[in-house]
Image 1 (cartoon, one colour):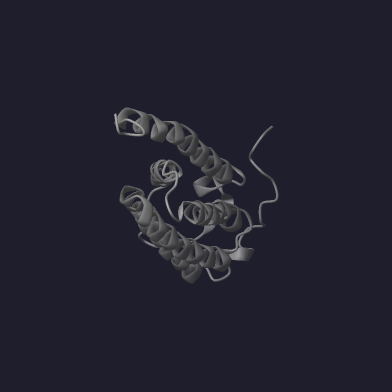
Image 2 (tube, rainbow, N blue to C red; image 1 turned 120 degrees about the horizontal axis):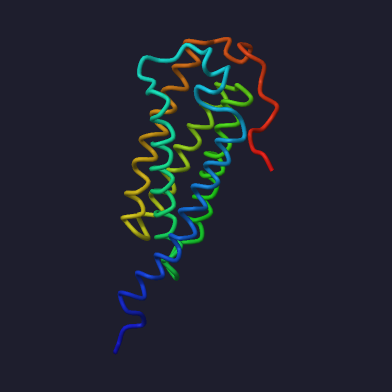
Length: 184
């Protein structure tokens, strides 16, 4: 036997990583979304004039759950690529872009900072493009799993800019939320 590890062993290694990264990404995304009321349960957001392309409210949790699963799988593929050149920087850049992602909901729905939220989405997009290129050097499938995320955050950026255009005084529409929905 000249192989270091069998295909089955390699598959199990990826699955072990995925069993950590997917739930972790989902949990962190869920926690970020629960820090402040979001979507239609947020009085400020409900009062905004929204662009015509704004999807119905039920689309957002479905989309984000799907995207977070894709992100978790992509991260698992890279984490599993032990010894790959650039793996550490790829994971670090992923963590940075994901931290920006987690900050968006409290910034937009909690602080009502529409322009800052749009700028943050721009930064998320730039960082995720960088992550995608780094992932592609290690595992092309991981890079492809980033594509739906980049498309969605581009769409979210357009919606955010549309909200700013339609609601230039959005920050003052309803007082900012100072409480969290997370109960301990």
